[in-house]
Image 1 (cartoon, helix red, strand yellow):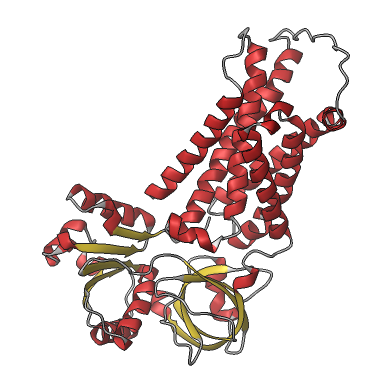
Image 2 (cartoon, helix red, strand yellow):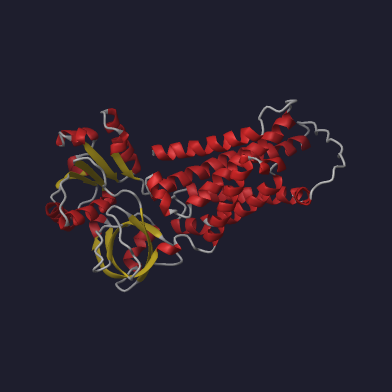
Length: 444
C-alpha cells in the first residue's frame, strides 16, 4: 500500500511541479477570470495526466509489477488514479462550464475581450484555434460519459460482466479528451518540459486506449486450455477446476494468479492458481467460490472438456523473503495461494519454518482432510479456526501461538479489512511494514 500512495503522490507532484515551471496560479492582475484561465489549464493537465497513467496501467505491464508489488497493487493504483481524475476533472469542468452558467445567470459580469492584435498565426496554431469550439463541446460530453463509467466501476453491486463491457468504453471517452487537451492546452506548454511529458502521456495513453478497444490487452500472455476435472465442495460453495494448457505457458510462481475466460460474453475473471507448476503435465488448478453471479453459475456452465483461455501469470505474492520463519494467514477462499505453496514444498523441501492459520466461516470435512494432508506433506504447522467454534483470529492469538513472530514475516490473503487490521496490529507491536505481505485481490 505504501508504494501505491507514494506513486500517486509522486505523479501529482511531478505534474504540478512541471506545470508551475511553465505557468502560475497567481496571475497578475489577479481576478476571477485570470485565475480561472490558469486553473482550468492546470486542472486539465492533472486530469489528463492521471487518466493517461491509468490507461497505461490497464495494459497490465508485466515489467512494472516488481516495482509496484504486483498487478493487484497496480489495479489499486489504477482505481485511485481514476478517482483522482474524476475529482479533479469535476473541478475543471465546473470552473470551465460553471463560469459560463454564472455569467448567463447574471452572477458574474462577462469579461471584456481584448481586441484582436491582427497577428499572423502559424498553420498549426491557426488550426488549433479553429478547433476550440468543437474541442470544448465534445470534451464536455466525453467528460460526462467518463464520469458515469468511472462511477459505475466503483459500484460493487454493478454486475462484473457489465462492468467489464462498459469499462472499456472509457477508452473512447479518453481519446476524445486527448483531442480536447491537444486543442485547448496553451500552445506555449508544448515547448517546455510539461508539454513534453504531457505529450508522451497522451501518446502512450492513446496507444493503450486503442489496444483496449481491439481486445489486445495481455494478448502475448494468453494460452488456450481445456477443463479436465471438476470437484465440488458444496458446504464451502467452492469448485476446484483443473485446466490442462497447450504449449505457451512458461510456468508460474506459487501465489500468482491468472485471468481465465470460459465464456467470451462474460469476459476474463482473475483466479489465484492453487497448484505448483509441473511442465510435464502443464496443468493448473483454480479454486472458485460462489461469491457473485458468474462464480455461482460455474457449477452449471463448466463441464469437463470446456475450452478456456488463461492469461498470466501475474502477481508478486510469491513467498520470497529472507526471514527464517513465515506466518501464513488464509481467510476463506484466500487459502488458495497457500495450497499451491504447500504443493511445491511437498515436492521440494525448504528450510523455512511455516506456521499456517486458516480461518473460515464454513466447514467441510473432505476439504479439511485434504488441507491437513497437504500441510503434513509440506511440513507446515496448521492451525484451523472455524469462526462459530473458535472465534475470530487476531494478532494477539497469532503471537501467542508463534513466540518467534518477531523474526518472522506474515503472508496474508483474505478480506482486505481483516488484513489491514492484522497489519496495523503487528506494526503497532513492532513488526516492520515490509515484512507484512498482503494480496489485494480486488480488480475493481
